[in-house]
Length: 382
Image 1 (cartoon, rainbow, N blue to C red):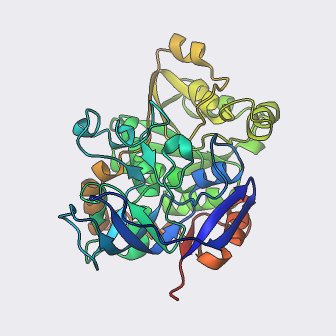
Image 2 (cartoon, rainbow, N blue to C red; image 1 turned 180 degrees about the horizontal axis):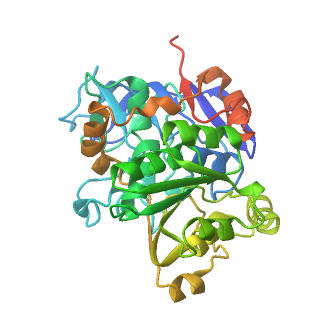
């Protein structure tokens, strides 16, 4: 099969790999029909995540058709159209039984924190991802869901990570009616977080970024106010002015490890790898939320330390909430919102890239060329 293969930072190519076999009775093999490149894939592409091994296939957002199932699989059969959450999870451990699918205890021998994630380094279990023609899906009776007949495939792809994660970010903010919500980052997750904040009762939503085309999308798609942080001497001071000098009720960090905004911190983390990620967005969140407010973190960070203003968070009495999104837990409510016309996930898709040209797709997305917000990857039939 043709598959995206990692060859080192900024180096990927399409190669022939063996079609993955059934390794366990609960496995399924899925023929990928659509995948996506996620902003967190760029952290891998840039060499930010530890133990990203040469030869690995990325891609944790994908949908497809079941090609083969193991002898123990009961819910799926060949020919079924499925959407696969980015979480690999067993469904029965202490954490899964409490809905914490992203913290499954049985699928990742390499970490005590995160569970398994498709195509996201050996820190997250070493599972090959879906930027390929075929992918092995463990625990096939637990994770994948059948794509409803009424749901467009491009919408389904965005339900495997980007939309649930943005919705989860707003959910973690515990938004009360009338709250002012600030979202750092106008990428796909930030856009979905901003849109979701309205669904949870926000009275005002402000999105912060430094790319004008993404801020324009935040205004049209998420109906949010926007601020370009490069236009202000201090974005935190500006946000205080905008909120009667109290601060926002809820701030969502949808940026993560490669935040711009502070040259020294960006270089020490994103370039020299001395931290687990640039703490700029997270520190801005801590500084711009009101005392007693809530900071929600869904941007991805590496496992080593970041220079976060934890003392300020403690002294302000903040609630900090964060996790990798347990995707399948969000689906019932998101299905409802999509069917009612409140959400159209594929509205943020800007590029559709053949698998053979995925290296160019990563370059376009990474370099923020051609007003790229969300690229999909489409394997071409043989």
